[in-house]
Length: 278
Image: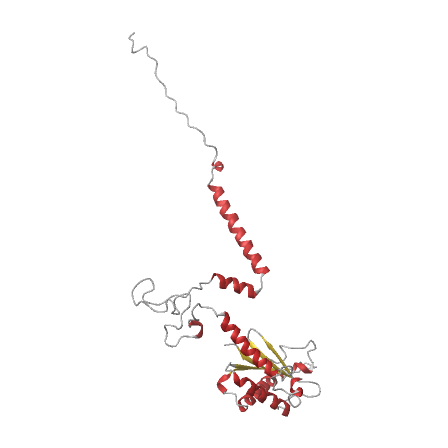
């Protein structure tokens, strides 16, 4: 037998090293960490919404809104904004002094240098409303209201503006009976309000309110009555020298917004004259 025939065959065996099952990898851990982070952010958002007031939430929103004045002048080129400047109503944030449309709607108009109301401007507007409030207060040294009139006036500054509330008393109603005919006292009150508020140019809203009726009527007149009284107040304001253009709205609220716990209280018969914020 030859020497070549005596050689044993060479067998090569390849053995693959095991890396463990699929769950021993790290990809699922990354996905799980992203999920936990997202859930944590979600619950943090829910907690903030529940633990803060509307004013605080607005402050947080203003904090994250852009506050750096940008250029008011368009370059006129074909760049990223196609020639529009950053203060046009189509580009956010709205931070310029005007808008690109010739007659833009109020919601589309640019809102000033930063897009938010300046603190100094808001403070100045509040001071103007407070000065009118002081003039209507019998406790103010500059009050133009008699003691008798002051018993029918309540004023308060709200987010909507300065609310001047004129209301009935048991012994001195502002209207004759259940009608829209004003008494002499009410005429004097409204004309005095027109005179005092002539120092400002805020728009005016008039609202009529009535007390509830003691019985349920088939044709309840309180809606028509509240609107008729509000409209009569508008006429008295205009006859007292207030320009008709300042009247923004006249509304009858019936007995839907009571000021007293007792729905049939006389003080629920009242007129609200609101100096609206600009």
